Length: 232
Ligand SMILES: Nc1ncnc2c1ncn2[C@@H]1O[C@H](COP(=O)(O)OP(=O)(O)OP(=O)(O)O)[C@@H](O)[C@H]1O
Image (cartoon, rainbow, N blue to C red; front, side, top):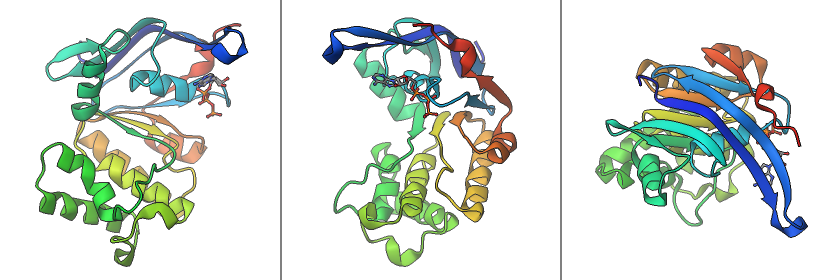
C-alpha cells in the first residue's frame, strides 16, 4: 500500500443510550484513499457526516465496520480495530488533528501552548519555542500576546493559535476541521500557504472547508460524503 490513509467500507452508527437505545446510522461504505502530498477535501451538506469521518480517521469515533488503514512507522495499522495504546501511538507520531476550536489550557502562555506538541515529541524547549514564535508571527499573532494564555483572545486569534499548534509538528497525516472558518482574508491566505507547504513536504491532508474558494485552492480531490449516507 502506498496510500497514507486507505479507508474501505467504513461505517458508523450512533446508539443513543439516553433515548432508549435508538440507533442513528450516519455513514456506511466510506471508501477513499489519501496519498502522501495529497489534500482530500470532504464535502456535503451540514449533518452529512464530514466531521464524523474525520473523527473516525483520528480514532475518536470507533467504526462499526470496515477498515481504516493508516501507514504508521513502517507498517499499516487498522484504526477500526486498533487497541487504545496503538491509537495513542498513531496520534503521537503519525496523525495531527486541528479541531475547530482551541481547547485552551488555563494559565499556559500562548507560545508554550504552540510549542507543546514538539516538546512532547522530544524537541528541545528552546528550539520548540523558536519554531512556535515563527509560526505565531506568520499567523499575525503580535509578539506582545505570546506570554499570555490564549483564553481571553478573540475567536479568530484563538483559531490561529490552534492552527499554529496543529501545524508545528512534522507528522505525515494532518486532519483539518474548518481551519479557516473565522479568519479574515489575509490569515486565510496564510493557512492556504501552510497547507501547501505541508503538501510539498509529503503530508497527506484531509480537510473540511466550507469556503468554496479555499476548497478549490487546496483540494487535489473532493470526496462528496453524501454518497456514504446511511439510510435510517
Ligand atoms: N457523538 C455523537 N452522538 C450522536 N450523534 C452524533 C454524534 N456525532 C455526530 N452525530 C450525528 O451524526 C450526523 C453527522 O454529524 P457530523 O458532525 O459528522 O456532520 P457534518 O457533515 O460534519 O456537519 P456540519 O457541516 O454541520 O459540521 C449528525 O446527524 C449528528 O447529529
